[in-house]
Amino acid sequence: MNDQPHETGRRHRIFLRARICCALALALLSFALATIAQTSSTESKLRWQDVKELCIEGKGWVETKEFYDRLPAKAEGMVRPPVWNLAKDSAGICVRFVTDATELSARWTVRKENLAMTHMPASGVSGVDLYVRHKGEWRWLGAARPDASVTTEKKLTTGMKPKPRECLLYLPLYNGVEKVEIGLPAEAKCEPPPARHKSMKPVVFYGTSIVQGGCASRPGMAYPAILGRRLDCPTINLGFSGSALCEPEVAGLLAELDPAVYVLDPLPNMSPELVAERIPLLIAKLRDAHPKTPIVLVEHIEVGDAQVVESRRAGYSKSNAALRRIFDQRVKAGDRKLYYIPGDKLLGNDGQGTVDRVHPSDLGFMRMADVMEPVLKRALRAGQ
Image (cartoon, rainbow, N blue to C red):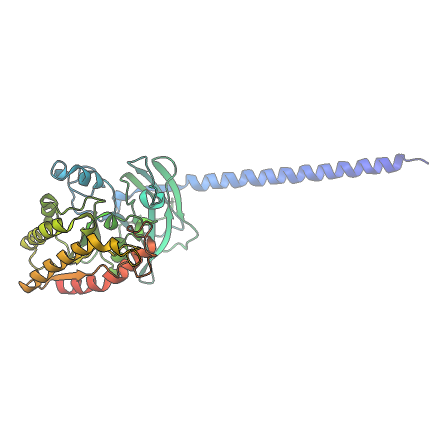
């Protein structure tokens, strides 16, 4: 029996399959190269805009040593070194702008190589956070966490329709920034937003690491930022982690500002004795400069496990009692622009609002904002 025709047919089929495989491989390679080229072409069309050309909010002073510092240059050598060093963190500083871009990226350089902490992620410590005004309300749109170097370039959002939107980009909470840029398609516009009403003043927050934003997962989740969006007003975050001691030098700097409301939340850093000594002096300093500006006093939060371990309350309950006495005395003396927020409900009552018993999680910050919002609204109305 002659097997030659059968063998020839088998070889022909193998040859055809090989040609088909090669053709498919070449097609896939061409597609991959085209995709890479298209991506590269798209990325090359990104236009980078320095945010200094837009609207920067959250700075209390113009004359700062570095652009994104939170205290004026003259404060160096005036305030204690820990306060000055923390003032280099960009907590609360944000960029407001209008763009019709279909996608947005961010490129930013931070000052410190330590991008995260053991109890707070890099996304909050050193990341940026984007919000957009949607149907009259601020809605979260995108965020970017840093890479393993001081300069990071990341996509924030994509797939939007090309129409003008007002956006808000929050800068890192526990790191400073050297430069921040927004990347958008070359044909897209990116411009300063409509000016806030000329009568609108910022709300100034002074306090501890909790005010600064520890331990939010994103910069926009610090409670001053949440309240700023809800009240739709600018805020100035003067939270100094572990260093809110109401020193006379800091009191003098706070008095230089002209806010709609002062929110004073320093108790977690202060002993009961220090509360009794320095809080009255701080309020008096602010009242001398701003007799009619509302001031909100915030008690020490009830720490996460205090309902079970009651001894946790021993220290801060005395501080809260001292603050309440100060408040009552000033109101009795005729101060009608003083407001008070008890600390027992700030984090809820289930112990779920912190990462370490003291520093709020995002849940804790939302709960704090829920309690504080109605008080701030009353204070803002009283200040008009």
